[in-house]
Image 1 (tube, rainbow, N blue to C red):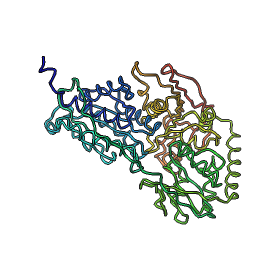
Image 2 (image 1 turned 90 degrees about the vertical axis):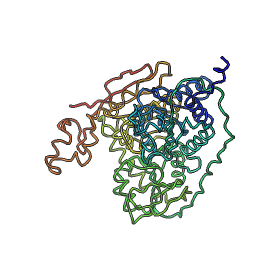
Image 3 (image 1 turned 135 degrees about the vertical axis):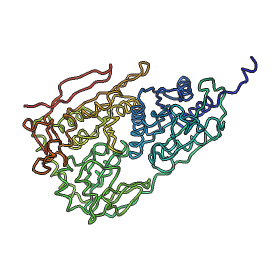
Amino acid sequence: MDDLLTTPPAPSVLAGAVVIDELAALGVTDIVCCPGSRSAPLAYAAAAAEQRGGLRLHMRLDERGAAFYALGIAKATNRAVAVVTTSGTAVANLAPALAEARYARVPLIAVTADRPATLLGTGANQTADQVGIFGPLPLAVIRIAAHELKPQAWRSALRRAVVTAEGRLTLRPGPVHVNVELGEPLVGEPGPLPPGVPFRVTAQSPPWAVSLDPGRRTVIVAGDLPPDTGRWWAEAAERAQIPLLAEPSSNARRGGAAIAGYRYLLPGFAPAVERVVVAGHPTLSRPVMALLGRTDAEIIAVDASGEWPDPGWAVSQVVPAVALAPGDPKWLDRWTGADRRFRRHVEADPDWSGEAVAARVLRGLGERDALVLGSSSPVRDADLAPIQARPPAVYANRGLAGIDGLIATTTGVAAGRGQPVVGLIGDLTALHDVSSLARPRFEPEPAVTLVVADDQGGSIFTGLEMGAPRSQIGELAEHAHPRVDIRHGRQAGGVLLQKRIVGIFRAQKHVQLLIAHRQNR
């Protein structure tokens, strides 16, 4: 009996416990875990940590949805969130969310259980070369081998993982991959853990703001940004009296300088623009992309990470932060006057267009609320909604603008914020990720309302080249939008815009699915 009491813990059990313990010590408060055998040491350690009150453990069935759920929590909290999987194809299913995290700068840590490296190439079950499986997506790849029994090395590696993921030193957050080799036995008691040495990181100080010369006709283009950053840009633009062309997920679409219809007004105003200040990650409209490709205007990117946006290859200056000098009030007046005329034209149309659905959803939300927008039509519809004095915090997966994982992201944002969240998504987006509404019965129910726009299966494409009439693309028109009947409703660029809300479906007690359905006359 004495021998049993003094038997050291299994290496994998110890490694799993140390990994979870160090993540919690570094400030990670949420871990999303998927069921699996090889990841058992990590899962049991996370469950024990939750019982001690060190973190929240979220269980999800599907690794792809779990990763997007973790992404949503990270978006809402601005802290690193870990997603734990078993080995094999489970790991590969994290790739879409890691890709979004990479280009949206979201701190996401993939903690993947692995077989010992000695099994590679042997045909052992669920054994693959997982190191490097995500290619260039992670900002760092960390290897932990349980059989080496080096707890201090494991803790040191995890410190690099969290600091890198959160961008504490680089001001460039993003995904990190931690691959943990775990041999059998996989279950047992870890016993007292070897303590870590004291650790502290002095975070990067706020960047020095560069003053811009006054007097040039300037516009600000604001792409995807966190809520606090977006609000700063809205206030700065209003103080400086500079027209603000803000996408919905920039969180800058507010205040007296924001232009609601900039997408339609920009072609007429663009020749007069002399300077463009770019903040965040703009992606939505071709007029903006054309503006960012101008070589006869000064394009200034505001980015402290070294990865500034330059889709038009025309950026002439990169600054970590700016101090905006007062602009010409008459320049802003020209924009706001044109915007008022544009709004009167839009609001005169009583149809339930996509824009009307987005406007009604936004009108029902306030500054304390949160909205997640789908990546195809919904975010573009919201880009034409009226400017609100106190809009909700807006989130969208604009890193790579994919439609996958949007329901999981929405529920993750709700979990991260700890309050109800509304999601406005398209029909294909909902169908793609409806399984993410599943959750364990012992977890709190998310307070989420999903408004689903019935676009007849991706009608955004009818507004692109492949949706052009037969006179332009010939026989390809037969395959472009065969299910869209343009004889009914109001047509704009090939897109049917007549919609109405027809019902509510309660997927869970506090989860509502509202369907905005196309109405044919």
